[in-house]
Amino acid sequence: LDGTGFLMKKSSRIFPSAFSRIDHPLPLSPRKNKSNRVRLSNAISPLFGDRPMFERLEDRTLLSAGALDNNFNSTGIVTTNITPNNDEAVALNIQSTGVNAGDVLVVGNSSTGNGTIDLVRYTSSGALDTSFGTAGKETYTTAAGISASAVAVDASGNIFVAGSTTTSGNASDFAIVKFDSSGNVYNSTNYPSQVFGVGGLETVDFNHKADAANAIAIDPNTGELIVAGYGTVTGSSKR
Image (cartoon, rainbow, N blue to C red; front, side, top):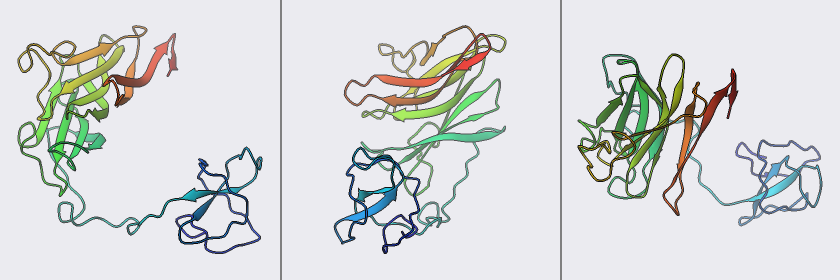
């Protein structure tokens, strides 16, 4: 196998790879041709049992491994100062639909106050998208503090940021904040008839202890949010 897992020549030695999903199980010792490339897998086949086997792959073009894309901000790297305090990125979403298709939405946290959510949107070339928030940036906080862990964008461009918000002592709740495609929060000022949660924030408490969301997805058929995370029950974390 070459460095991408393609079969280069037959060998009497077998080197299982890290790939485990088998869509089209094939017999061992297949022949390589232009339309049927294969990769060795260490998955268990319903036909061949617990034996290394091959899976069918589509043709693909690979970029140079680890090379920075100089089309992005001329250097392949972009840094953005959002607050006077520490800022960190924790999640991103490359937008796939609408006028913002190709833009890169980055969500993170800063230590401003008791904790602030930061959002930044870049164009596909790495420039700040000045149509978003204030000069490409937006922040959101609560009196008790809030932090982000994940982000999802629906078909209309609405942005949902999931994380946690402090309640009292060491307790925290799931937190989901909704923004429109321009970075405006779905609160009573911006959307009087479409307020999301309370002031754009929805929280969920499980056990009056430390709960936090760390993943979010949107059902493409219904638009409903699916949020996952962990909660604490009598001192033990439960996911």
